[in-house]
Image 1 (cartoon, one colour):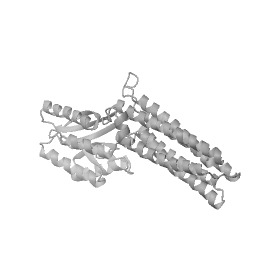
Image 2 (cartoon, rainbow, N blue to C red):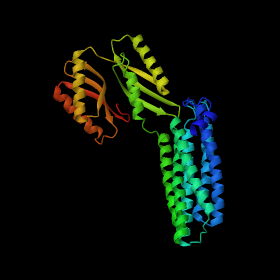
Image 3 (cartoon, helix red, strand yellow):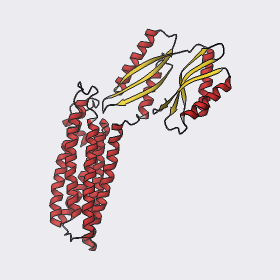
Length: 391
């Protein structure tokens, strides 16, 4: 069913990196959500009036808020699809994250209001009438919401959309919430025990939990979350597959919204390499990364000594002793300057951001170990806290 809808309503549906295609995916998700949630809300309003159940009526308001969330998703994708302009040179892709955050806030508001109403119902219970029509409506709602969860999760994973993943999570919480309402209705009918208010509280808790999780998923990329380790590894593999490059470091990936990522890094090349050949290789690497991952790339060339055996041996010795301090640390930009009284060993040290050891302690330990190799060695280095695996 999902595949049929995608092929029917989305032109060029496989080109998910195109903002225009993403916008059409958002329109499909939003349109389906608005239609189905309005139908479910109307059905449950009718059932709530018929039975006098606060839980059923609250579930109707929940579906109505979901329809509003679908409108937000629809508008969010429309705005996110706008091209870059003078005021926003990196595009408007992050609006999609803002749309997901707004959906999450709407979910949380519904959960709070439902919780307050349900608690009042616990202290002031009212008789709930049983209706077979209500049971049928609730079962139909569970099935529809289950399909909507799978539908939005499928679309969200196709295009990597946090907003659609939030919508899918909300639909799944609705499945649990409506199931609880149905269970409460049946328990009240067959046991005579009124648990309508308690069921409403359970529904509210599920809604609040879903809203909190969805909010976190959208806030993280807005704040600047760490890049996907798999993407980092794939970029490193591409760079190091070129024989002109002997190492890389300082990889940074910026996310300006779906379909708009940028990265930069330093590529180490032999200092005696042909400058034009090395430059051509760097240009090719930048194009290859964009073609494979859709990431715009800027690379900086770092010339390093590779044919001086003394320097090579010292580099390996310093790398080993740095890893003795912390096996996850690494070095780069290693060079040697010799003087009449001492030899400067100049390098940068990449320290994992999770390291609890202070920079002062790390620097002191590295200095001590380097000078233990030879008292004439004077280490000159910069510590860099890295948030990317591999430095």
